[in-house]
Image 1 (cartoon, rainbow, N blue to C red):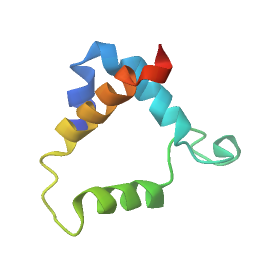
Image 2 (image 1 turned 90 degrees about the vertical axis):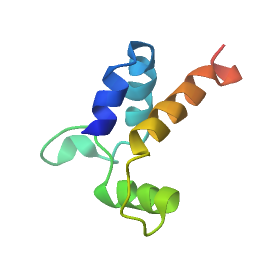
Image 3 (image 1 turned 30 degrees about the vertical axis):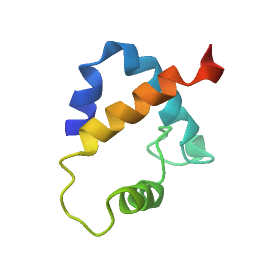
Image 4 (image 1 turned 120 degrees about the vertical axis):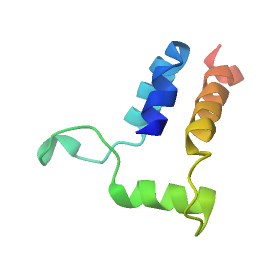
Length: 79
């Protein structure tokens, strides 16, 4: 929830956040309830594990997500 709040505070990142969510959506998401284009739980768990290891301290996650989305927004190929 803190990640969502951090992104909501940055309106310039909203389009980038939606684009990134669309890119990591489940395959055939429209065939199974809840019929939402959300990523697989296992994918999110994998990404969290690769970023934070076995640590239980995710306090940096909101800042890390905002930094990543800013990087995506500023990537030269988008211009």
